[in-house]
Length: 142
Image (cartoon, rainbow, N blue to C red; front, side):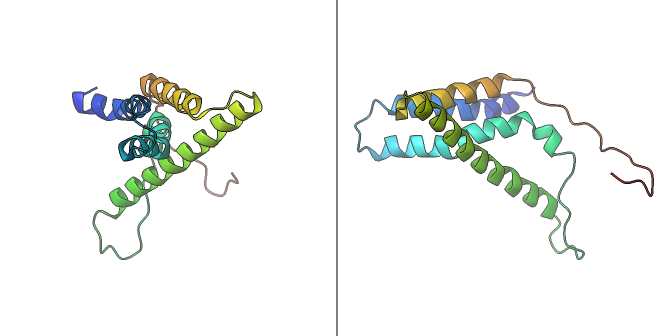
């Protein structure tokens, strides 16, 4: 793993711990709101999507028939991973908040702490390896 890969891998947990530290700022502080919002919108999803990054890169996007943009596949894959990270983050926030509400222990700080710990754990987990696409015989049904 290169140092650049390590920095990219540790960016979501760092954002989570920064958001937790921002809770010490006054309640109406724009910096506090920005740190927490950015982390909750993308942090957990980026760490969880990073786990399966090699598996997502196995099949790249298919472009239109006429190739006007030579970087279509790269841009499309980047957009796909970004949107997937946002939606997975929102799903993680909703799941953690629902569990805490169901157990009668809900607070914003606990949600943020739980997601920061989840993000840190996901960042330290080994990445899933990509398996080659399965080859089926011609005429067989999947």
